[in-house]
Image 1 (spheres, helix red, strand yellow):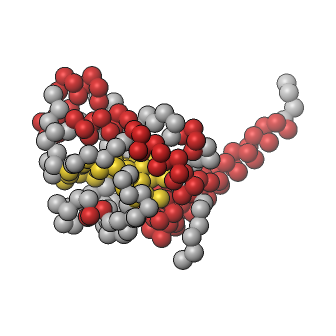
Image 2 (cartoon, helix red, strand yellow; image 1 turned 30 degrees about the vertical axis):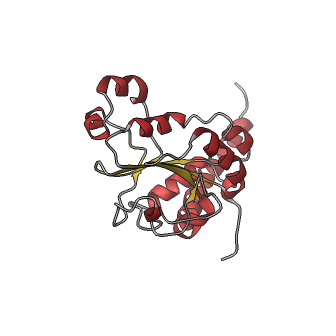
Length: 210
């Protein structure tokens, strides 16, 4: 299929919800060559190239907070976890016990120069850095293609790769074959609600003022 750049035209929540609806686990995209690493962003690879311990595609958890009782698994002192990371709620998490932990953060919008200027996701990266009991970790943005240039700069500055901590990005457009139908369904449903709301608003405006 021809290349297309359209993801930035959809709200971030529409894209995230569509991925959640289409993929209960990562099997649909796990073996696709879609991962652009921070160190080699122009050479897309598959997730298993960075996470070989995951022999099969793991579960994809949507907006699931990290729990205090999991601190032992991560290797973060409970007091430090509560104070620093207690409110974290990643868009997507892929994990496999104490072997692998991957965070995916969704992005969209038409002003990438502002979106990546002071990334709030640094707390997720620091969380991964402190997970000293996890063997293999990763932080990835899921972005529109038009964001790529700004995202590369942001990753290099704020999310450098370390020996057991990978970082990079995946483009929404590379997932369209998987989530395209869900995007259409979700967006049309939202549009129909807005149209209904506009009709009711117009009817209300036409009523005489008492």
